[in-house]
Length: 442
Image (cartoon, rainbow, N blue to C red):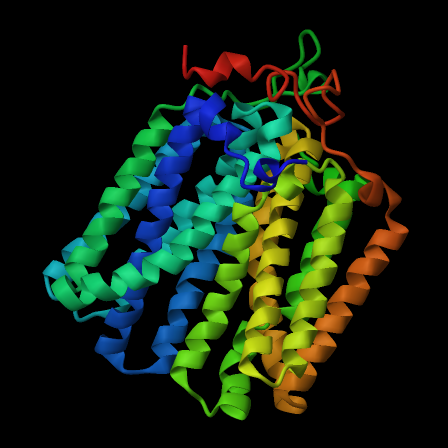
């Protein structure tokens, strides 16, 4: 492998115009979301000066995601996925316009502000499962992992750039300008989705009605059954849940900062930035892992490193060592997310892919929230270092156990361009025929 192969693989941006448009639009939308998120946090604080209400922002965001995420998965398997994402992205544009309007009007109701946040979160939840299925429909099989890595790099970069831009915009032009940037970013994302080729609702051969039988509307049932019947899927999700539920560290950052670094707010900011820097660095070098076909084993190793790195953070005394541990954890998390995403998209049959993606989406949201609660509860009973070390080691041990008992996940290989026919779960209209989609809609 040459040094160029170790850098981020940008082939998806060159070979598929629809994916390139989607990536640009999604990247802009992510930056806009980060800017708007800081604006909402500041506006709620200015209206209430209450940490309870600022905490309610997370509730207003998470509840619609959890409730509507699985609904979005079923819709993604029942309708044209492009049309679904169009509609939900248009809903995000309208709610962003609503945020601008309430800021310009001098809104004093925190409930109205949180309601707009909840509606926007609900729109995102309905469209997220369908969005997750786009790379496998737009890219050759050997480029899907690279496409997911590019999306992850864009997200990590938005986490670094977005809040900084938000601070500048809010200081110079206040809330309306910050929300207006999100409107522009959401419109760019909508244009990218409009330009995608059609993605009609998939149907498996065994879903076709018998002659004379009444045609069933909507997708076949059994999304959870598919996950439980395929060791690669349930093993991948189990490893992810173990990593987040047992070792999520964010809630413990303020306490660790208070104990070891005198509560310096700059140090607290460095904790958050270190994870993002590690994730971004891993993304920029993602060619090293996206060209490895043993994605199941790579995910297991990365998830184990995540747990061990966070246990190291719990033991670290010097600030430089603590930041190094967090950066390693962030890099490991990025590797695990990219490899898991590729495995899930290939292993889920196309007519179930929306529902399986919705489960992945919900786990990705609920796991960290439960993990933060677990960490805070355990720290209140013991101490923050004990909670971090015990959680990190427990996560690593659980992931290793999953790998030992789940040989199909351990041995799983994503397809390459030389593998011939697609593996089970990869539809013929998906990565087997990427060239027809590479130049855009017909």
